[in-house]
Image 1 (spheres, rainbow, N blue to C red):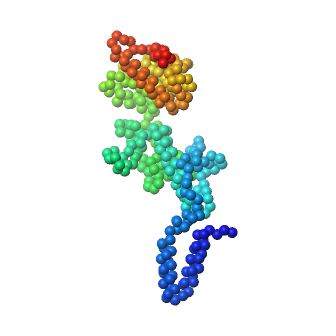
Image 2 (cartoon, helix red, strand yellow; image 1 turned 60 degrees about the vertical axis):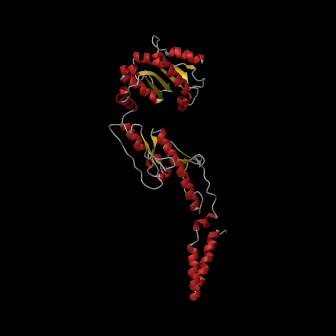
Image 3 (spheres, one colour; image 1 turned 30 degrees about the vertical axis):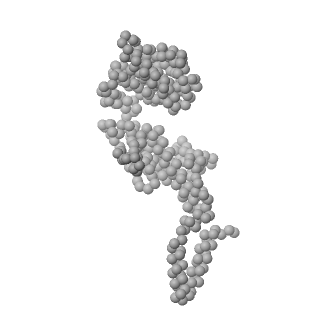
Length: 343
């Protein structure tokens, strides 16, 4: 049977101390000296001799863990919850492994705050000079402008970070119990739908702006919110907006009951860059009688805004030039489509 070296070390020390304690004054001095020596022994250093290197993966996949549809952290192969004592009798190594996983969890929660909750990272202090230490908070886009409500979430001390209540809960229970995300989503819901938010921003900011040319870029559900804005503020939008670029929009003029005049305006002033395997700006057939659809040059939904970036700004430039040219009618989206095909 193999006895760990750390046990042997302590066994020898214990025997020596027992022998010393049986002696006289000289032996007591030796005992005192030995105790002083023991007080200066770095137990962590001794423990390191028998543990593996403290090198851990930097991704959840590397740890072979992932969050399931219920927000629970589970082993990819076995489906089992996280196991702290991955290696028996190596508490320090297991703790370091747990801490490494915790850092990955923190980054994962940050991504959820930005991607699912649509919060933005704001660095503080705002007037920090280069090289000075900074921290950050997460806040919604309308945190400083919403006149109705503001909710502030403050987590406790310890290793938890922004967006978390308790890292242990995230790892051992689920995302709902361990993060602030349910609070954030509930606050967003009670603050109104995205459509209501778009109308509010229009009424209080965009409609009162001095800009003669207003352009919209609306991605995915944002396209649906824009169509709802048109339904509620048709005359104002037509008067203020020069052109609208949609990117893989999920709007539906039939389900949203957009009237004929709205559909006609969208055909002339909007274009939807959709996910497609066709080359960028290739015309894509649509079953909906609203705006033309062209390929964004990618099949990935989340990349459509970026891949069509240059085309969208050309589209805006052409629309503004046509509007400002006296005696020259604004180009229809049909003519724009022809130009795309020529390119």
